Image 1 (cartoon, rainbow, N blue to C red):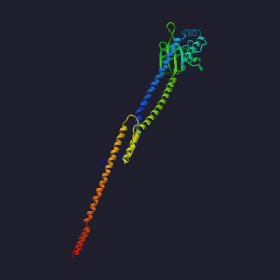
Image 2: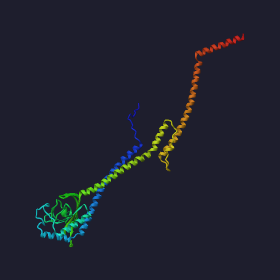
Image 3: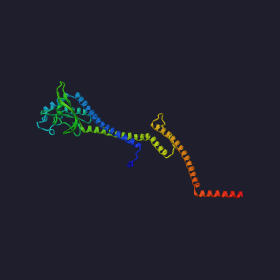
Image 4: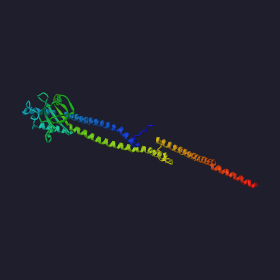
Length: 350
């Protein structure tokens, strides 16, 4: 006996199949696009912020009152025993806020520079006496409430050489790092006097959390846009798949009716109303031709069946007559009738 597939087949409409296929194909594309957008946006945000910092620090060095900067340290180091700090004095115990007008003019100018980058902290420093040591000169944070940043003549020795290297060349630190004051991205640039001599350096910090907040904000908005686009596009695909498959569903319904012998079906409603025919129109036309041929063949078959039924009835009738004629009863009856005719004929002759 031939084997039959006993597995139960579940119905899944063509519309859903098309929709699922589109989802399976384009969901990885959407995910890959969002990952690319995430990486690209993060890089662009960091590049934009870093470029702004470089432009700001370059403009600050160009417009800085270098002579006042030099004079400030000379006066304070000559008149105040706290400047420079004694050897071994740490960052927490060194530094102060002088009454020197040059200092307040300097930090006011740094505060003006900070207004260009409101999230930044601008400060200046010089080379210290110890290896890797720098001494703070001014900070835009001196005018904040509460006060933050370098104090004047505050000693600071970093665990890295970045801030110290800023006394000789521009140093960009775009990877977030941590120090006693927080987590930052930074750029440093040396300060030259009129003779081209390096007399100090300026640094601009931005909290790494600010950069991350900007990145996260853009990425969050991008994610919302991607989700809305995803839902909208797949919603449109679902609607379009319904429009595309509607004629096929209609043809399937018509085919089922035709299979049940109902040939009077309106296929014109399934025709494409546009100027261009497609495969569905070809299939519809083919089904129309098939309907005509099947209906014609059915009529011919019915006529032949009727003829065969008549022939069968005649044959059956002849067989029944033959059986009656050849039966003993009919033969005996026929013999008696024959004798009666002879007797009747003999009596008449007398």
